[in-house]
Image 1 (cartoon, rainbow over the protein chains, first blue to last red):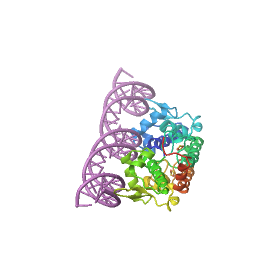
Image 2 (cartoon, rainbow over the protein chains, first blue to last red; image 1 turned 60 degrees about the vertical axis):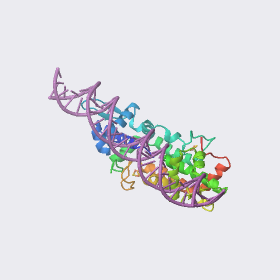
Image 3 (cartoon, helix red, strand yellow; image 1 turned 30 degrees about the vertical axis):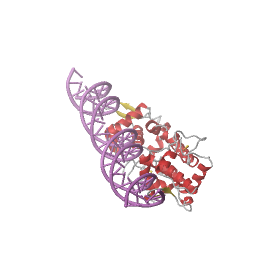
Image 4 (cartoon, each protein chain N blue to C red; image 1 turned 90 degrees about the vertical axis):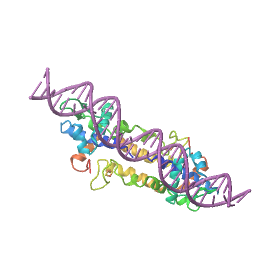
Length: 144
Length: 144
DNA sequence: TTTAATTCGGATAATTTTATCCTATTTGTG
DNA sequence: CACAAATAGGATAAAATTATCCGAATTAAA
Ligand code: FES
Ligand code: FES
């Protein structure tokens, strides 16, 4: 469903949010360890998220990644997915026609748009705060 | 959402169903042309569908692909997707945890399973007959 | 001001997916 | 039987995704 890059991006963002609530900035190394991802690849993804203003990076000694506490609840999964995978998941035809077009629908169009719309709503409705709180309370997990 | 292979597999199956209703067996070449797919790659996918008993192949002169007319309405999208992409789309954790497990859920598990379940139901509920009839009536299209 | 801890960014490698090519095999027809 | 028209299947190539490596730039602190 999501690319590996996107999966890492989501998990990393949640962990960064969690740390930011605690007031601690986290390093790439700590993130990769926590979400069980390859360090260098994760670095690329974090750079992407920084460029898209999803997370914030501080260079140099004692640097790392963080998110402004006041923004965490307004960052939606859709922002992260969009930054990494683009909007293909929302707009692309499920069977690879040139465009998804109501007036020239592929065979699964009307079956597919319902699921796609639900996915879109879910991503737009889910924010980093709730996901981070679930990790904090031990309700959900970032690895294994 | 689906792999390219799966997209081709679905479109090819619909076209084969349509031809089978007309009583004509179709060649690989005709299929690839109709669904706008690379011929050799499509051949591999069709072989896969044959092995999984989704479609039927006849070798030699005047050979080609067909589906038993009486079976078309009972072949579901889920059969095709399963034959080509396996069951990952149903069972895999959305964030790549080792397994999707209610007792050890990833952060998006409870948000995700709804969408996944709707997708599953859609695939299990949609059969080749209805898709082929839409193509026949000009309600939907296999290419462009 | 030097050093160490970091992120950044370019180059490259490994893996997976997608695509192509060529030969073997099967089968209907003259 | 010989031939032509098909699918089957193995080998290989191209492209995309995932992963690694290494040096440059930045920054806090000794
Ligand atoms: S045209 Fe294929 S999903 Fe809309
Ligand atoms: S554990 Fe991740 S989707 Fe179920």
